[in-house]
Image (cartoon, rainbow, N blue to C red; front, side, top):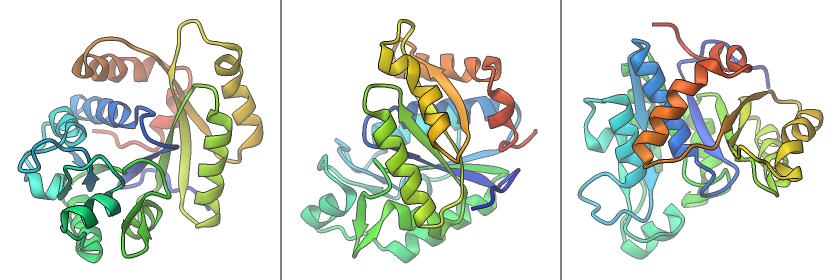
Length: 242
């Protein structure tokens, strides 16, 4: 699909679980906030939350990075204790997801901010409720999508499948990033950016180096690294100016 330049926000998905999309999303939110942008954040569904009366780890990182004053319910509306797909956790805990309300809540959040980052759960095919998937949520909210992929072995397959699914479902994709590239990459990691770029229609917007430290330090490091990346102009064109 044609790509919108200067959109109202981005829906950020991963090629699977544990690819580092929360750290990246939070780093992007922190960069935007420090640049003077009014940035909204949302983690619509989060599983594996120890205390569902509070934000989960992912939601809390997004809230911290953006310094949002939005309510917990508007930024992290569905929080589940069981570490399972949101649709599964919701069924087990007998706390159904009201899909239409969730979409409306996300759209209202987008309207309140200059730019909004909405982070999905897992990958595109993760179930939410009643046959709805994360891909449906992304499409119905209407923000263009950015895909986060891990640089590790297997990323070519996972990335191509995700991008192909998005194209088939007619979800607008601004591009993808390769996350957590080691300082001493293996052959698979070293060649992944070139191989993916030669196989995809979408743009490779960034290769994010692997950083160390606790999650807050990692977010701060990546936030400061972003403008120094050779590919920064490719990503920057989809971001607002303060």
